Length: 85
Image (cartoon, rainbow, N blue to C red; front, top):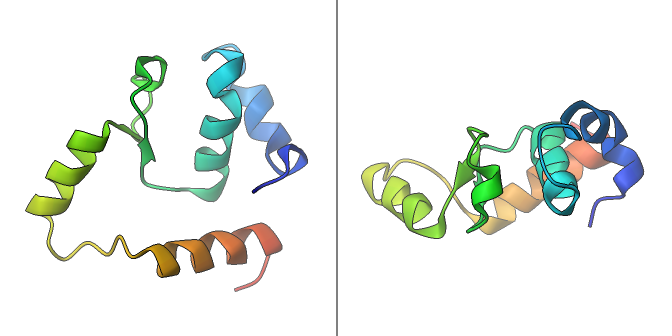
């Protein structure tokens, strides 16, 4: 979990572009520089990070060299949130 105080700048930046219910998810993705925001919510279609689960799997099939390993992703997120390298 990421505190909303960590993403306040992004929340303010995108608050007029998306509904409040999706705002924190988008803010976290933008703040952490994540490549994908996997969701069925079409309100997020305007953002390049948005992918439906099906599109994400299709991208994974075509890009065998991509590393979607959960452990590596979690470590990267924690390093960014905690400000460590």
